[in-house]
Length: 135
Image (cartoon, rainbow, N blue to C red):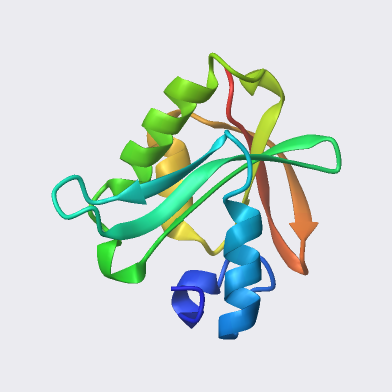
């Protein structure tokens, strides 16, 4: 999945990763109790992940799913479940997610979740907006 340029278009270095880079990135991404694997309930097939990680003192929410599962509402449902669980563990009022302006799918997830735009900014050379996760 991390070798898929479409999946990686808005993540990390914004390019497909080698096997070694992918393994290191994936292991780091899943560290901590506030990160969740998304899997198929029937087959247990890995679909993606979502959750919060503290980066430079900021609670950064993120998610991604394999491209063959796009367009099925999985990201929104995973975010709903993660936010529900995380609300008991962290102060979501301080959590944010960066969404690049051309990431239409993630902007739809943010809209469905009721996340509010906080400010525009550039991250990793891409313009977008930070959204507040908590109410």
